[in-house]
Length: 98
Image 1 (cartoon, rainbow, N blue to C red):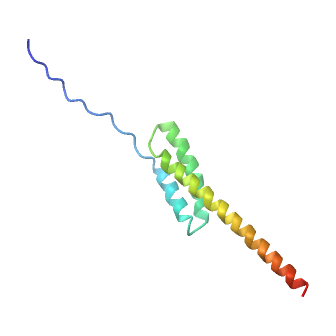
Image 2 (cartoon, rainbow, N blue to C red; image 1 turned 60 degrees about the vertical axis):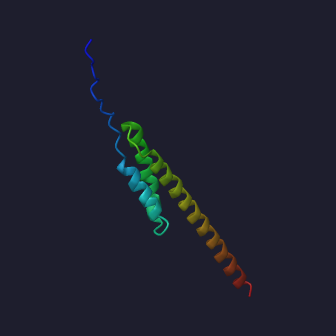
Image 3 (cartoon, rainbow, N blue to C red; image 1 turned 90 degrees about the vertical axis):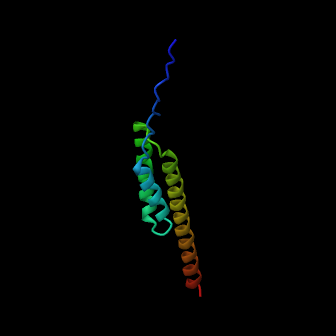
């Protein structure tokens, strides 16, 4: 009986990494220094997750990290603005009674 060797199988191609997810993460990290880019990171993160679900690409973790970081930076900046505003209102209120 002749010996048959199986043909080498090629592995299935791995899905591409979603570029929008990487851009979203980069914008969110840049948001540490330039606040409006955090908002861009959030928007791109949502778009990237939608693209990833539709095309089965990789990069969902990158997009999720961009969303978490972007929302956290936006929340911290809003809290900082509220604290600063409260401090200024208090200081001007104290100065009005002097």
